Image (tube, one colour):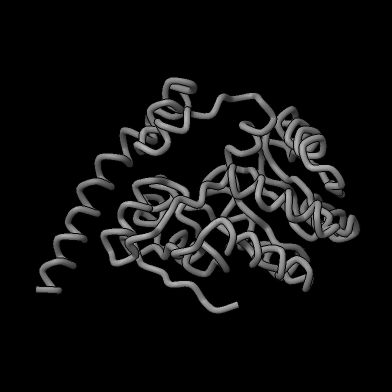
Length: 254
């Protein structure tokens, strides 16, 4: 497949992809049994990358970085990709699961709360007839020992999983996927909150709020104690810093 366009938002790469393109690419990699990783980028990820050169390098080295958040979609449009649409991690999960079921590609789930990991596995299996769930594991909320990690890698590979949905949350899931590229013989797709959403543990924002770029506000109302520091720290800085980047870019274009 031809390479997609991309832009760098505050130094972090975001690809000008679509649901159809991203899904086909993931399926193609899975059928070829390639070890790859995919990031679904939002404001939180951009700001984590802005603050950490190490994390920025991990995202920029990903095989695909989709514009998960509407602010990134709007920024890409301002940066010369006028028809860019959102490629939202939870929705991409559905696209990929549906196509994996059609193609007979085994999928797995790693991360999340035990109820979320089991819930997403069961719900997607019911939703997409023929979906083969070959692996499902919620790791403990602590770093795994080298021995434990080795067993996880062996179990994933032995299961025949070709697409592994990873729900550890940003930036933990991106670090984990990068560290396991070349070890896990599957396409790793970091989808974070998709586990809770598709398990029915947490409500998703209404579509109209998502399109307005206000999903963060809905999620803040749902989980204020966990998320308020993230949004207070990252959102205002993103607006200011990206505004400066766009003004600078416009100045160079004159």
